[in-house]
Image 1 (tube, rainbow, N blue to C red):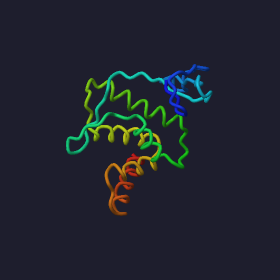
Image 2: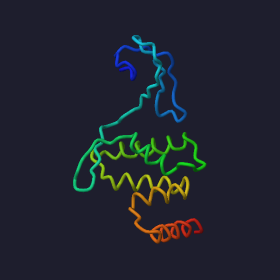
Image 3: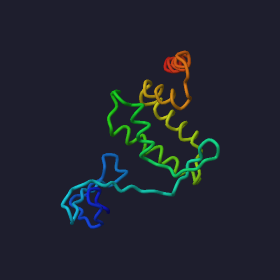
Image 4: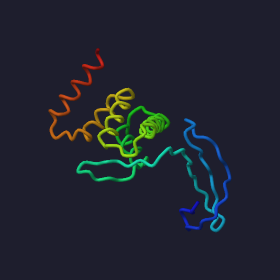
Length: 153
């Protein structure tokens, strides 16, 4: 593992433990050259995923990008980081178990919306505003009205 401080490739693992959700191994490492300590995470990856964007552009699936999007939607909400981690891990697991190596970006957006809807309605609306490209306040009103109607059923 390359040291993020000096780029040396030799490091020692000082501590290993599973993450709270058990989906990864957290390792504390120490660089043998500069002595700096850093943390790495080891996750199971069933297959390499490619995201098919609009216009048929393709790019590798990035868990970190998904995590940033969900975290942004959940900012300043009563949602624990572990809940976000579980949500993202669940979505990634769903994508990896489809049997497909190319996933349309719309499918990822739908999975995130579905997961956020069950977690927090404000985070759900925030994500939807970007995903569905709301342009005016009435777009928010209409969408929020539908969300509150669903909550009453």
